[in-house]
Length: 508
Image (cartoon, rainbow, N blue to C red; front, side, top):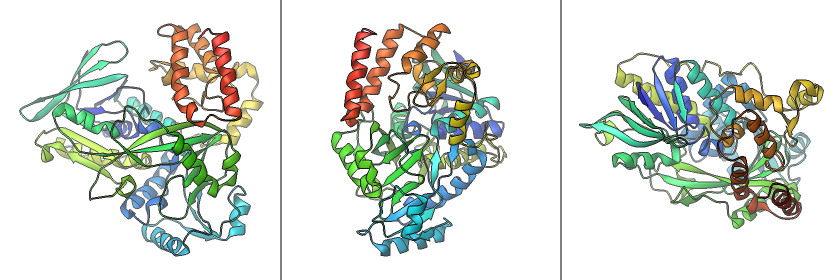
């Protein structure tokens, strides 16, 4: 297939889809290419935290300013993707109150609301917190649904003229006389080749940035930091809970939808194709998080996963935690003489919109176009439906089954009607594409008792590509990677039951 556009965007995470949307709102055509599905990289493997910026305010004030600014913008343009839980930075007896005082002053300096609270007031607002706490500071942290946020950006981009192609991998950067002229790519499912002509290519692949640059014999030398996280089978707290001390492993707990997410570690890695959560990391996270919420020690965990942060080392740093969380925008025409190639990397999920704005400003400057950014004031699709978890669960219980169809996922109360509505939207290439667009398989059983029902629906609609039992086996093997590190007690017994069911009934 041959296409022609103004800008090719490589990467279907939050930054890539944010760029596509920004360009579309400015009236500039683009084609986005993603080798998997949207959110296949770090955008789908993060903490689900709506940063206030407070976590970095002492060590990295510029990153903190960016976070609090974008925090306020996202609450306005994407309220349906956000639960404004608020957050506490908790001081335990062994934590320095001098550091807490520096933390509060730094928050005030960059415009982050920071309210000191007494012990009894904190425990009344969130009884799950360790009663040994001596003080806490309230900040405007929250939870965000990264999957919905990215999908809505892609949907709005396409609505306004962009073209988004998933499961299409870039295989070659085309250039002549020091100037980009497009890319070669292939469909990873059908093998169909693509040639896309464009005078500008944006590399928004995050941790994979150097892999794309290697096609042009270029290199940024990113530091790749693995962060491991654990998911509990229930919400442990009402607010985001942080340890009030310099950032370390296991010092934050985020309530997100029906679960809580514990994190995170910071381990420098070289090979991002083989990222696994280790047993020592699981133990380390549980031990550290239980200092904040004692119930962590007896809580059931349902999944472990890891994401990779791409960090650009502006200055010498001892490890990944010492490197700035600011993003870096690289014009490879000015840096190495390859005009038309731009890389954007680093940053955080919450700064995706700002990162996209800076990229599009640079592109407009190079094109000689004057078109202001509109993404900070233009609502995302669905913004008229604010986040309401209790309302969603109540609605499920109140609506007659005839209107919703059979329940496919008992853990997250996902009905057949919701899945069929997603199928009608199109653009779905495989099973994982559907799971990225729904809460199905994100509950306690992690899909063990609902994915085979989903496959039955897909088979009825003629949407299964290949043999269903092989698709099911592939899902279970991928699921096992996240389940294995946290097996023990009840989880282990359930996994033995699941194995016997799939061996005995499905002959897998």
